[in-house]
Image 1 (tube, rainbow, N blue to C red):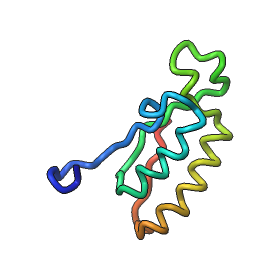
Image 2 (image 1 turned 90 degrees about the vertical axis):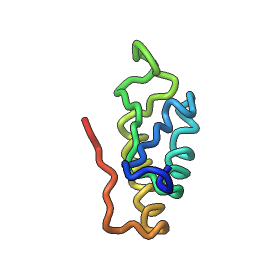
Image 3 (image 1 turned 135 degrees about the vertical axis):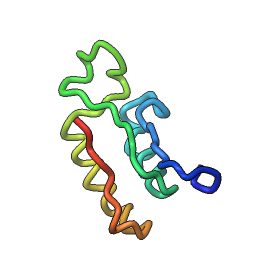
Length: 87
């Protein structure tokens, strides 16, 4: 997308995966591919979520994933760019 559009590329690893266990791997892939941001489903108790609980990360899982993604961003050479967290 970055080759054909000037707009930021936003990845959605939660919906792409459909399963909580796959979200971090797809998020790493999105960072490696150059995504400018992500939409990630997060819920304090995913098993109680009214929708998308099976693909929602807990707050602790989200924090862990974001810490790991910082390393991937460095490998990508994007030290000056920040993935934004929106509550």
